[in-house]
Length: 232
Image (cartoon, rainbow, N blue to C red):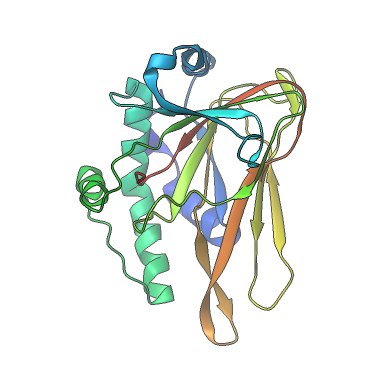
């Protein structure tokens, strides 16, 4: 696993500011990715399995890890927090919203748990041919961290086709803007969880953002989702 601290965080922050998302350098080797994908078959590592078609979320399946997490999952989730925290606080200041996030990630999770959000949220997603994920936001309670990360675990164009990451931003008094990202294997995409600040005629406005995955045309696509707040 690569050291997240070595990434150009100033450039990543600028990219997130401009587009609401940013692609990181490689974080996981091909072997790391294969190892995490293989965990999908170990049902005992997960607290629940969601059939997306059953709940009309799209088509495909994902599983929520239960604690203790695999070492790479736990390390990645905690490592992203201090780098995304300044962005979160800046967004809250511009929008005139509370910024409840403490410096320490463990303290933040303790806050979630005291608020009744005790269920872990790291996700392993699996998409087969014809699967897709409807546009949505990962909100599991009142306490929300405004940024999250998804890491591609397979090789687009080789292991699967289609399956692009979709992000749609509802701009103030304007038509929505869409962003499409193809996730390289082992790279992460930082993206907006709920909304982000955008300039408007009245200053700063909260621009709602949703995300999803386009239809997988062929093959098998896995991804690791790192939500930085826990769930009720």
